[in-house]
Length: 179
Image (tube, rainbow, N blue to C red; front, side, top):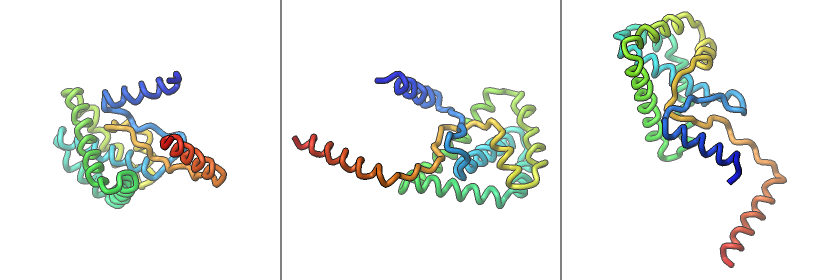
């Protein structure tokens, strides 16, 4: 096993064992799914804050102000989960939402009584935002915890010259298996 593969395997194992990997910007640039994950994480963190700090009215004001944006981003998440998980999309999406709330609640419990003092200001920050673009920029800049890392880039388009080589490789593999 090469050193780079060993290093990559170690990074994956670390993320799985600790089950809190921050969703990092991918090298392929900004994608609609990445933004949707960011906004969902912010929405969840605000919900956990509202429930923990008795600020439901402030959460409801956030949802009311950005209802259209939140619904559009939810649709992008639905599309991501359908294209990634197929028939198990709804279950995977539900698991993600549950894990997101759980990991953020756990973070709140670890912070103890200072949690509300640290987090309640987020409502003032999002209240000052004026557009869906402002919200997207805000969520991208915030370090909001995610339960796992999700690949949100579109797959690169295959070049036509690469396809015959792959087929030939598969054909050789099949021939080798039969021998």
